[in-house]
Image (cartoon, rainbow, N blue to C red; front, side, top):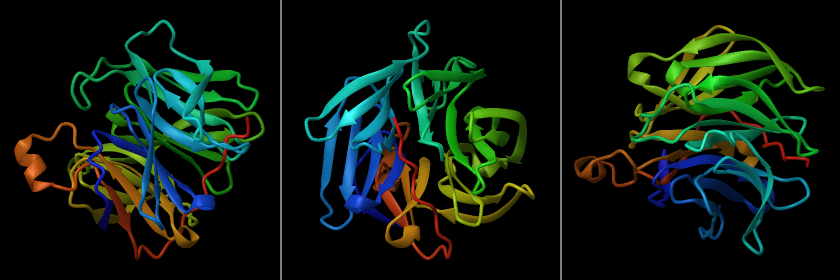
Length: 294
């Protein structure tokens, strides 16, 4: 694992590989920034929005979509504008979106949480899971969520994987790709103490899950069918937040992390905290991200 970009993110999140531009998209939530790092030129472009931005995704018609505050937005990179497509949790003024991802049919899934008073310290069970459909209508799946986090779909698109961080569990649902409906929630992996808090997640071509462990300084590979951990990759930073595959043939893994919550001693010990890491040599590939089709 090497730090390829010392960005000093307060809370870096939502890495997404954009093959067309050989770039990595990611966000810095409290800094309200969406960033695009060109892996060839090593240059970073940043767009600032008007509220904490927690996830970004590709959009089939061009530009991007992002979750900003409690809004699903369309992001025009050229003129740096954000257009609101839908708003959720209107009655919960203290809430914001957290992690989000597009499903294989082009729906943008994202969940909410209460704003933290300190990292992972917040009013419990205030969040919900939503999906923005291509026609811009929103469906709510369930509420009582603590910190809505990592999400992805199985290779055959029949299972939806989901993390509510403070349950310390990776859960699975049966998934109906036609309707976007989910059912039959169950846990496929419970985190061990030293793995700390499950955060962002992605899947590889073998159908195994990779979970970034916040405060655990690692990414773990899980077999959701057996519930076994297959591999642990440690990083030189504690607050690993999310991961995605990218680069040539999606054979590299990119990992985001946070600086917020580290004291001055912690920052001295982890000078690359808040940077973007690249892990090579995993011997497994990921799949391209799905674009939002609305």
